[in-house]
Length: 237
Image 1 (cartoon, rainbow, N blue to C red):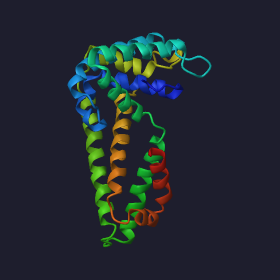
Image 2 (tube, one colour):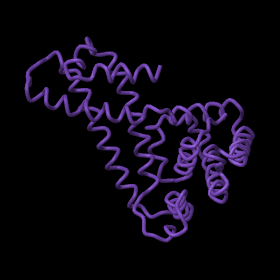
Image 3 (cartoon, rainbow, N blue to C red):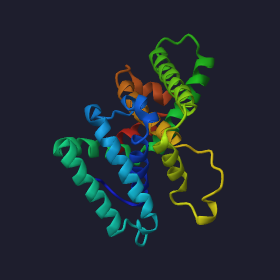
Image 4 (cartoon, one colour):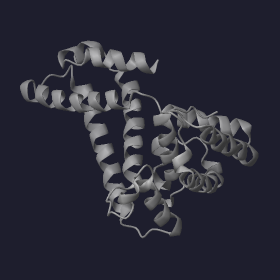
């Protein structure tokens, strides 16, 4: 089933919203989407669900927790997914989305930022140190990969939107807005959210690859990141 609390409810909303976008299709592999053969069925269900959630926006919470209506909406979409793609596939879908809702995102992004900065300084101070070379190459590989993803998202944003996407972009920045802000011009895009999900999923893979580097704990200690690395791995265990 779907794991819900206040923050996760809106994360679920955003995930369903971006799955409904044709613009997100090229990046599903990057976020580990598990059900490519059922993508179109899930996309249509996602679009209908997003509209239902937005229509009931003011009834989603009850004293800082999801309301019974919220729980009902998610139970209904779970039942519909089960009917359309089967129970095991629905469980796989929920497991994938629940993994995206973990509380390690900010810590992992901070670790990645510091890792790049400290590696850059270390490279300037010790340019010919072969022991740390595998780590530097791995960092460069993820730098180039993520830069390529971000550039591609910028290109996709320039593609004309279909009718659903015009609505989805509006619903994305209106959810949680006050009435006075509804008609204000907004530059944010649901692909900004999806870009963050792609980055998070990519950095999870980076953590796995870091474990294959000889003496990685000592190398990260040299960069002052051994404690942060240990803490993140404990949170993800």
